[in-house]
Image (cartoon, rainbow, N blue to C red):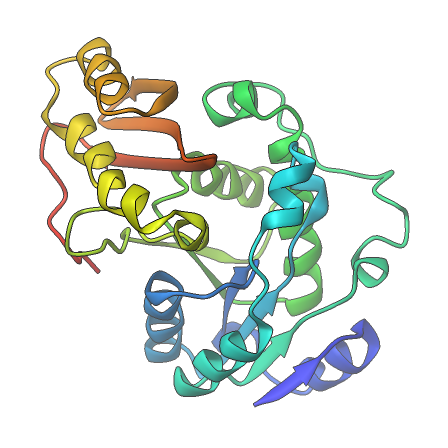
Length: 260
């Protein structure tokens, strides 16, 4: 496994290999079993697997959330090796943003709803860094989890709108045995709140309406930002013990534990 922190050597290395057989998993690190599932699928479907690890400041509208985001690079690299990753790109901010974020990607409609309505500018940061990484890694396929449903759809839309030569591969949400979607932020939950957090997907799945889901979550001690239905998905965002959690699931079925 080769690790790169700068762009020039990364590009020199990748240019000698066929892009069509390159699978790419972009992450912000703090890798968990959900990321491992993405890497394992990329490994099974491609001749080469690239992983990026970069905590992208522009997509954080809350400075405290950025400061508290877990950084576990040594453990991340250990998981990457075990998953058969060939290339890791872990750049410093100045490598990805020599323009100091003056140039950015903006979607003007869907990105202003749901997560975008509660996190102004979030998806500008997401789409901008994903486009930069696509330009640098030049993958044939890129793997994204369905847990970040709106992000996934926006990345798909960007790839189509900008004629990017990359296939966006949807991967099912990986869940703990109690149904909670795996997330790097889960590590910030206290043991007590981690147990309570399983009520989040359960309430979204079992409630007959979004209003009923909100009521149930509030009774369980969650601060609810939103629960809404979008086509055949129910999406929600809550705060528990100062930690923000998001999830989505197909309607009307409850997601089976440990789905992969």
